[in-house]
Amino acid sequence: MYIDLLTDSGTSAMSDRQWAGMMLGDEAYAGSRNYYNLEAAVHEHYGYKHLIPTHQGRGAEHLLSQLCIKPGDSVPGNMYFTTTRHHQEAAGGAFVDVIIDEAHDPASEHPFKGNVDLDKMRRLIEEVGTVRFPYLSLETNVNMAGGQPSSMENIRDVCALCHEHGIPVYLDATRAIENAWFIKQREPGFADRSIKSILLEICSHTDGCTMSAKKDSLVNIGGFLAVNDDGLAERARNLVVVYEGLHTYGGLAGRDMEAMAIGIAESVQEDHIRARIGQVEYLGEQLLEAGVPIVRPIGGHGIFVDAARFLPHIPRAHFPAQSLAAALYVDSGVRSMERGGVSAGRDPKTGENFFPSLELIRLTIPRRVYTQAHMDVVAESVIELYQHPDRVNGLEMIYESEHLRFFQARFRSVAPVTVGDVSGAPTAVKQTQS
Ligand code: PLI
Image (tube, rainbow, N blue to C red):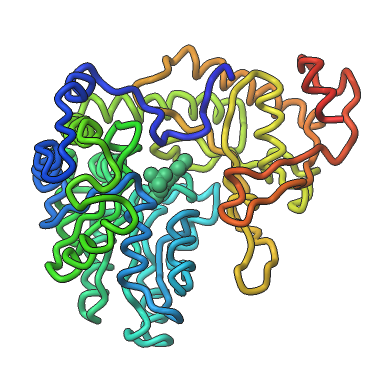
């Protein structure tokens, strides 16, 4: 592995201050002082009343889904995310997509492709009634759409609509700070506001959040559920003890909570977020200049390459995005991530493959890890493949795990690869493929 762009989750570099915080771990089973530091940081930056730490984001999603969703419920959201939808379905709910149509079009230049379509949401409320809606799941800087933000206006309006009908709104705040950056850049009236104040305002419209601190908060492990409702918080504290650990550590070591508290404060620093998103833009601009089809506008945590347009000769059944990810790795040792048909999985009712409109690979940039020179290498390899799409073969899946298959699936090339087909590939790779 030369450059690892699989994910920005838990792969960012911690600062000297965070590492110093690790040395202050208070590993008391109950009431670690690091918990209280984390609670203060979440309160100051996200504003919610109650904090329940979890080992990572999906731990918080599990708690929220188990506590709020009943079998037969519909859970609207602005595009699915893999683990979020999985926990909703495991609790008996069905995810309903209410994101604007532009989010499904990689070429649309809409500045806020993460927005909820208010008409879709209104229609859904009319069709289903409010009884079967446990909450709206509102993701910031929507991952599967290409790291695309929602506007403050849309967040405010959709929250008002939901609250009018007694429906709570829970934020997926995993990349809320990247969303805040785009609001500052693109939405009138926010240019002079601090990232910290924009983040607080986003959260103030909602009733709570699930959080994977492995992204925005710059830690290798950690997450939390934060809510305003006293009763829900009490029920969550009861449940976290069953699945994660005591309510003052939620599956984390004291030192991890300290690093998270410090990471939260660092994550809203303007220079940090400017450099972080600036690096993503640096890579994206090079690909755009070479005509490579990528999701536009350039998103927050990575560049999403439109594999369907990149490899029109590979049918969806042979997973163009997974095929491109494999070819890129063979070409240059750059690991990317499939975000298309493999990630989407199967319909739990029919067992049929989902084929989402977006068939993408994600070049995900960890925070504070790589230099622009690394980005040059990535761009060179992607452009090389774009100019020689015939070098990329489709794949068939030879192992599929039961849950969240994209994490563990295995593939083989549908066409036998003979030596010389893949320029520059090491011999061992060629043998494995054939
Ligand atoms: O990986 P977790 O369990 O800490 O978090 C799950 C999760 C929830 N919401 C969102 C928007 C995510 O992006 C997310 C995890 N994302 C991963 C692992 C990624 O590679 O994007």
